[in-house]
Image 1 (tube, helix red, strand yellow):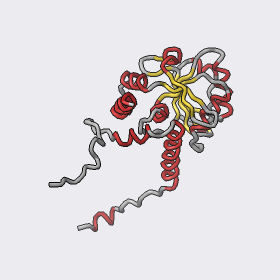
Image 2: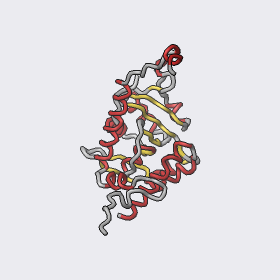
Image 3: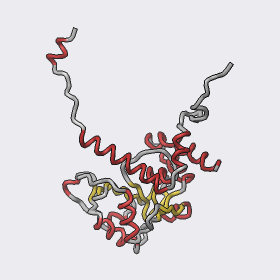
Image 4: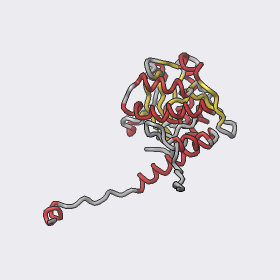
Length: 66
Length: 163
């Protein structure tokens, strides 16, 4: 019987580290790794700057729930 | 107060002023292939008397002030840097942590033989603390954040050794 191919075989170490991500990082040059970090940091900071607080339910709204 | 985060510009400024330093922390880990994230640049700097004026020159270029109470715009002085502690700064290119020592008191002379020069292109070469030593330092510190990063660093080192 044919088994479905496990595309994630060996993707994780025994302690749960994503080895595929490490291998991808190691496939990059140091300059490309720095650029990846730069892009992540830029995204994180811009997302934080643009985020607006989620309105919290008022006490009235809370008490009206069933 | 947070400037645009530009790791490359921070490193270029340090090199432009011929500062003796070593990249450690998250950026050092990333440069060696570890998939971790960080929002600051950590460096260990040489406390030698000829290095401190060069570092001060770089910090002036970077408009560096202490991150605690940034509104007071407290600029690091030579005496602060000579003390060899941790100087947590904000610059026009983002957060920069100047560390006189890391782990169990390891300073620049202890670490410099455990660094590799990494070519980041466009003429930028930076000294980076080797992953094995970075792991040892984080094991010494034993803080929660450092411990959390250790599995990724160890597995990255294993993958590197397999190549």
